[in-house]
Figure 1 (tube, one colour):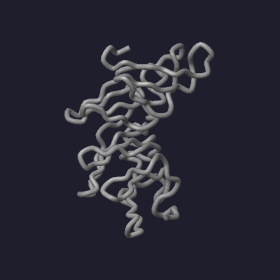
Figure 2: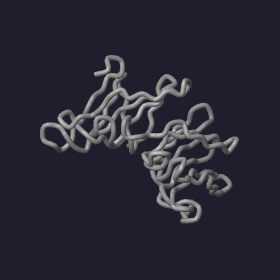
Figure 3: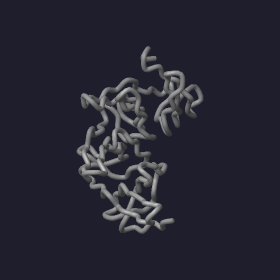
Figure 4: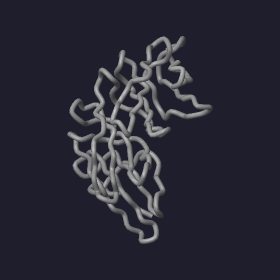
Length: 195
C-alpha cells in the first residue's frame, strides 16, 4: 500500500491506529531525522506526513498512538528540555501538536511501551529514572498532573520494557533486568492498593 521514504517518514514503530476510515501511525526516523506522525487513507491511497518531530518537543517515537475524544496521544523516547522524552497530544482536525509532560531523571525518563488510558488517566512506564531503575507513572489528562506511582528497584525487577497490560483492575508487565536471578521479572501492580 505504501513504501516509506526517508523525507516523509522512515522506520515505522508501534501499531497502526484505525480511526475514521484512515490509518495513523508513527515513524522513528525521517525528515530531519526525528520521525513523523502520519495518516494513510486506504480508499484514496494517500499517505500524508502530519507532524514532523523536533528535538525540543520530543523525538524518536517508539510506541502506539492512543485515541481519546478525537485526539491522538503518545510518547517519544527522547527529546524535550531534558532529552528524556515527552507525552504529547496531536489534534488531526486542527493540526495542533502539544507537549503535555516532559520526562526527567528524577521522575522517570526514556518511556517504554505505550500509554494505557483508564478513567481519564494515562498510565505507562519509563526505562530509567526515579530511584534509578524506572517507574510506573500516572498522568491525569483533565488536571495536567503527572505522578510516579511506583519506582522499580533492582531486587524487585528493574528497567521495564514492553507495554503495561490491564487485567482484573491490575497492571501486569515485565522488566529486562533485576529480580533474584538478575534476568528480569513478570510483575503485578495494583493501582488501588498501590502495591
